[in-house]
Length: 238
Image 1 (cartoon, helix red, strand yellow):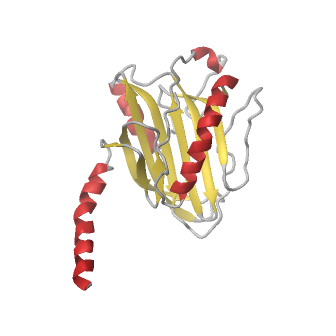
Image 2: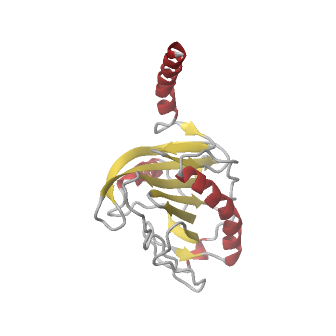
Image 3: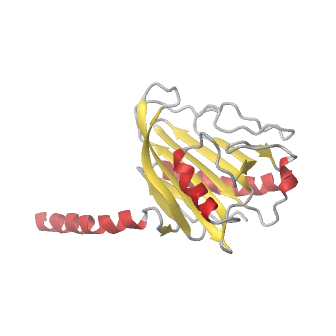
């Protein structure tokens, strides 16, 4: 029995470098991505890892230091960025997470969220500026905008964003899926000048699409919150 255990341990150690390499920046993944102790479900197709790292942070009450695992992934179509995922997961730190003020959607669609109850914060149907780097931008987004500078036209002007914050007891997973719909009209912003992270409503038809897609996304994210692999691959939204 001891020899069997040693053999299993040896095989696991031999596989570890290839697993780490497979999820390193520049690698291509499908289906899911390990994000610290959590699992990030990915929509169908190949995703290139732009950033994968760990950084210092604090809990939502700003009192308890913790560590955040962060990832940025991109999916390309026709040589251009068609979708981006920005995700972060927190280590369990012995406190309850309260995701306050994560998403803002101000407009006639009446989806302005300032704070949310624990367990699920879902902000969808929002436009986010894509093509320009902004002062004070989070460092883990640098790889995305650096590539956009090297490849003119690679980034679209705007993304349609669907953001989920899943927080249960001591677990925290914050994932934003940014996508370019097939026929995106720049006029969607209503002439609003946006900065990175600014959000304005999009037409109701797009929100209905996001609602249907988001139901499956929330289910798979809750599995990933506890380190479980997706039960089924997420479909592509557009």
